[in-house]
Image 1: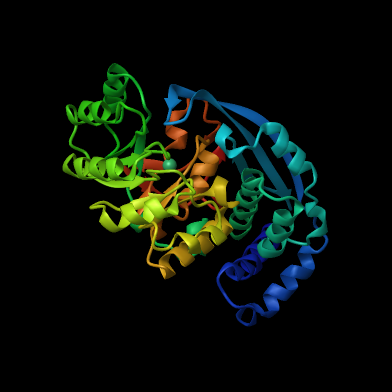
Image 2: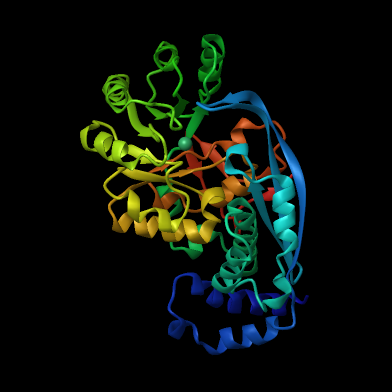
Length: 380
Ligand code: MG
């Protein structure tokens, strides 16, 4: 492609990229019309492959342990550029590499004239089959990456977000023996906040072990592990004295009544994780929780996550942005939204030994967004 044609496409595409935020009448410019005519002749092509992430430590939460996480890596090629996406598949989500590949085989992107038609394409993808949220997220991430690359802009800039306003990210410590917890706490030195998985009968030991090493603020995630709301409340008061700043999903995901009871009495914010997957799950949680944990793999990707942020704000809910065990592909994508949220838990790439992407960094505990276009991740 000649450089003048590339420049033209960039300029015209930047106008189309505004479609993420601007009403159509503001975008009906001569340039964007020309651009859509030019891209009519091009086709998007989708490829994907399974990949297994190796965890640095066996990861244990309230309900299970694991040493690997399966993912599917996705590429969408268009006009000489490639957008990267990823589906991460921890077992509790119910998706597998086989189910994701089967889903992706059904996706026909050749019917769409341009990757800028995000709303049309993702509505089509969502309607192919229910659930499959991680598979859907892999397409969403790759399309956003492509849109960013065509325009030459990072996604946070296209969304109007200030990269100086990224939060610190927490670093997760799973349930483990005292010795391993001590070792993990020491390894977590570069991070300014720790997230501690609790929900078994070792909760006090875990917190006291960490507190014998550091006084960093702690997030606590019970992963539905607490069964009695009065015991949960007593624990939360004790945790507050230990310097814990929030509690995630203390009780069963469907028990909104107990969560509302806790939220009313708790001295700490109570954040929904397993209780919230997608946009339409938010409204019933208002009053039952102080905030929600949004994850790309639960909610089908960046586009719905951005909508969820607006709905949560409108309902005065705090927002955490979380992740699964993921490569720097999906983590860098989520990080694009981080200037818009309250708490980040984007450490999935830091917990694995075979990250095949280079992307967003954590500097002095804080997420550092780069100037790289799209999601900001490149293949290693
Ligand atoms: Mg959680």
